[in-house]
Amino acid sequence: MPASRDRLTLVAFADPNAFYQGDADKQRDPARFTIQNFVAHAKLAENAGFDAIFKPDFLGLDTLKSDVRPRAGFEPLTLLAALSQHTERVGLIVTESTSYTEPYNVARYFTSLDNLSGGRAGWNVVTSYYGEENFGDGRLLPLAERYRKADEYMRVVYKLWDGWRPGAVSHSAEGHRFSGDLITDTDFAGDYFRVKQALDIPPGPQGRPVIVQAGASDEGLDFAARHAEIVFAATPDIEAGAAFHRELKRRAAAHGRDEDSLKALPGLNIFVASTPQRANEIYHSQFTEKNLLKYRDKIVREAPLFKLSELGLDEVIPASAIPSEEELNRVERRRSRGLLLRSYFARPGATLRQVLSGIYEFGHLTLIGTPQTIADEVALWFERKACDGFVVKGGNSFAGVSEEILPILRRKGLVRSDRGDTFRQAVFGPDPLARRRSA
Ligand SMILES: Cc1cc2nc3c(=O)[nH]c(=O)nc-3n(C[C@H](O)[C@H](O)[C@H](O)COP(=O)(O)O)c2cc1C
Image (tube, rainbow, N blue to C red; front, side):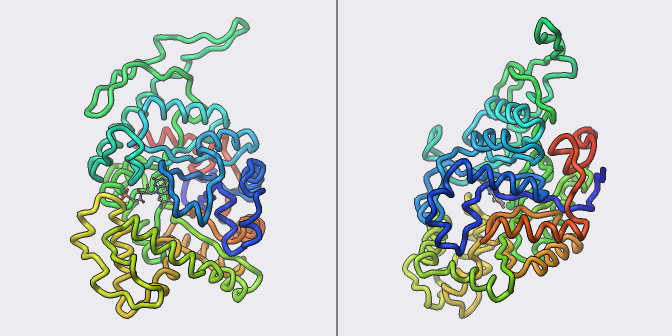
């Protein structure tokens, strides 16, 4: 099985509701919130050849977003545990926050998910940039400290996952037997966490879940370069993709890692139809007055330094509404997104409508076209080393992505048809954890 970079690594959002944009009838259909719909979506992803499905998580009530794209009534980890029972091969990535959980809990969650799924668990490690009012003392740590704490967190979970050595459990007619001397106490005492005992459940087939991350700040990127096997990015064009890819691999090499031991996956939205004109129409149908104004309000709420709340859609954005780079560099939430937004809003003469409709997906790549043009563009990104694959976030039709675009990519030799026993093996080839450990 190839361990190197000769196939795309493909992840799809585990949410069918992300793929009904521009389809008002489907958006009104209550059936889209049922577990059956999520199961059908996961099966479609698996059969199409996606390596994994991914459920993001943000621990707070997002009233602005829920009006546009309401959530179904499922918490992400339990949802993926349910989906694991309806799928056989696809990886299952879910977000857990190092700011609002304890390592002992999270190590158990992923060991359990790995056991439930036969070795398909993946953890998107986030440090969170909001939601603090719902946890602990209500404070959000500064960005650099969030990542310092996350780094210690990882040292604890690695010890927990590696605490059970081979042979620690044996099975016989009389039942399971645990050999205490093969189970090592964690004995961790750091600045943020103290954990005494070993994990209380035996490891899953992967030992550790596949580690996923999406840091974009200097601290976040460095964390990803040290710990992650899959890295999500927000890169809106091929130059930004190539720069991110280069920088991530450079940082990984500086930490002694093989550059094929981590994959860079930009977020991708797809608007696909049988003609480019129709795909464009569907894409632009989202930009109703109401949606654009909601989007403006969301930006203002997430990045309050942008003074856009009173600005009409067809007004030219005044320079006074845009914060300086120095101001943005002092922000502790979504610093990198703030800088990216600045590069869009600071274009002279642009109206709010022009900018908002150009960046509707917050710095992620959007491809609009026919199955063939989209597959060609995906292949070009891969060839130019602007990505190792994509995380497909949303668009107008998941059936179009799975049943029309992926078969073209498969014919180009870019979709994996061989699969290992676990999610990690499917992406990296046999025994990749041993490779990673030795690095
Ligand atoms: C594709 C993608 C998915 C993400 N999913 C989550 C998520 O589920 N929960 C979360 O809190 N942040 C999520 N993030 C945000 C990142 O964790 C990170 O905070 C952000 O990219 C900014 O980087 P920084 O933390 O280094 O400033 C995601 C980012 C990307 C690009």
